[in-house]
Length: 271
Image 1 (cartoon, rainbow, N blue to C red):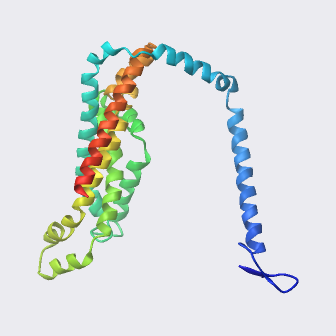
Image 2: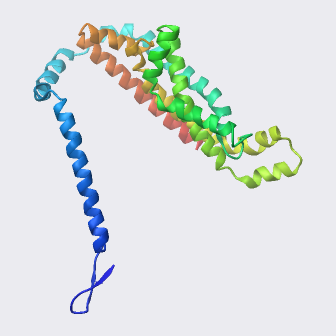
């Protein structure tokens, strides 16, 4: 903005004096907060291990290479369990997320005062807790195994899928819904012919995207006893079998890359 100089000419400045002071104060406050946080982290850190980390990493790399290729024959079932955990968990979450999304969307909920807040609470609650935490809780309730992993992935995915889906429902074209309503269609017919066709592309994209995410999450659930290839990884780490660990990590990497490729192809075909 222009500011008058002493000789009467206009000088262009990005901010006024008041804005510049506020901007500087904001930066100083940020730096002070960073300094306090860094001090707390530094006091809680054993710096000897940090400086020694490169040597330890080099030693582990030496022990882990080459991978123990013959161990791959024992990874078929665990990686299959991992895929099942991700797939079944995604399917269950979608079945539960659809009604929650319709109850949460402002244009389809039966009651904005009572039902919508409950649906939004379900979305927030299931999204706020990590799948590993859900797995730990479920293992304590129903015992370790693949079933606990499936339920953990399903619960974690409900909020993600329902949130994106109810936002898609709220963004539909109201004209199409009004046209079907004007024909005397019932509430269910309006939903089936006026709303569902508009959100199907979004629903398919959400499903594939969440399945891709769940492939990644299900690979580590075995670390807490929820089955899958993570269980093999945990066992190998416990006995310091580094060649097996490196092979398992390679298998996980390949599985994730394949799932990413599949989901990208499916989303491309849908969109």
